[in-house]
Length: 127
Image (cartoon, one colour):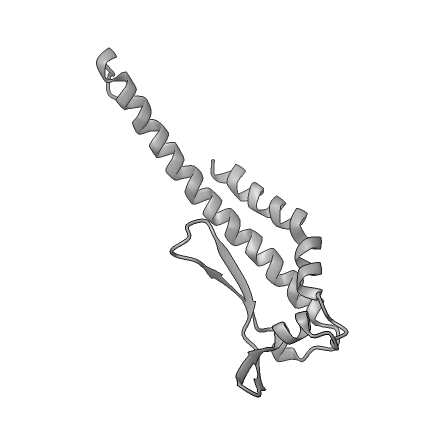
């Protein structure tokens, strides 16, 4: 590290903090990826009861490029509806006639601690 003069102290600290901020941001991004994987595995497991193999294997994760530290988990299995294709997960989650109603939310809620632990473990390792 180069010698810092008193008049450059504020700028030097700001530079170091920006660098550290980048490290924390990238570690958090990796942590969210780990958290997303936990949720996908839990949803696959929760989908195994009475679901088709295609539905179970269709859980995917996506990174929102425009929203920074944000992830989206969805199921790509579609079924024919009156007005076009409908995600099967929506029918199972929201249909009043579905015995699986609310399973995505229940799975998410019951997975929060494990998802958080996966993210924190990555962040601690990287930072």
